[in-house]
Image (tube, rainbow, N blue to C red; front, side, top):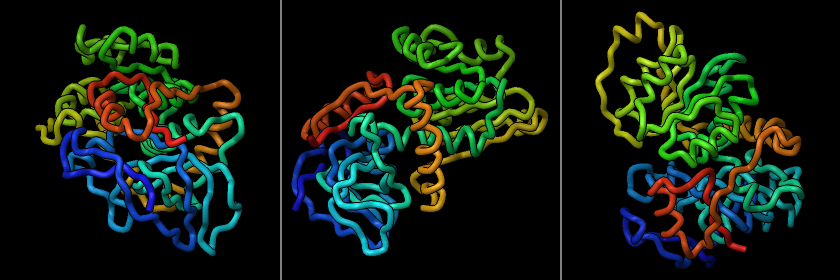
Length: 324
């Protein structure tokens, strides 16, 4: 048995508690990792509420990214040894003493990166890379609007966009978050409590790409903001799932609307994104071109506090659970 975060039932933070669960057994191409740190994500909150169940065949426990040490491995695993420090994206089960990590998604943790820092990278940076570089095909000189700029994904997306030579505009809920985003490379940070982002973005000339985690509440305004041939990539539904769509605007401006989730991607896609994480993001961090954005670290037993902190939008960057 191992310690893990369990739920009494689907619902609020009060349903989470530290209990015992069965130890997972690695498959032929999996690593059993002793978890030292796990990232906290919006997807965990939605899963906790019962709106984002784990895919078939993966752990129903919360947690999508981990860093730790290889405890055991399947017979087909190559390139890793027992005791290796690794990190990566998991299908579920990260909020536990031990978790299964597909070898194809595992990366060796460099010595200059702590377990807390390593656990903050996979979900945010792989999401940013997949949606901005692969799906939206963000180009040098384009203007991108990133909603929730101070979130974990937002912080990664700002830095990745700036690194690729784009002009970055983001939305935030406070002036300290605006300062945080500008330090990361945002050219313009719009406090949505003080001004309508639609007018602000249109005054700049519109956006070529929008990365949106809000959904229905922002759909019409997003389409208004886009330039001709603009691309809207939706990665969340914090503002609802149902909205009316002006197809005329879509046609006349030749707009592209793309929905995207990382968790449901195939292992081959996740493996490819893990390579991008190693070969591009890690090198950029080491070179000082981008930075890790760990905001708060909570012990595993304080998971309720961690979830509440994220739900109330206090974070600037990533929240981490620690088991060390």
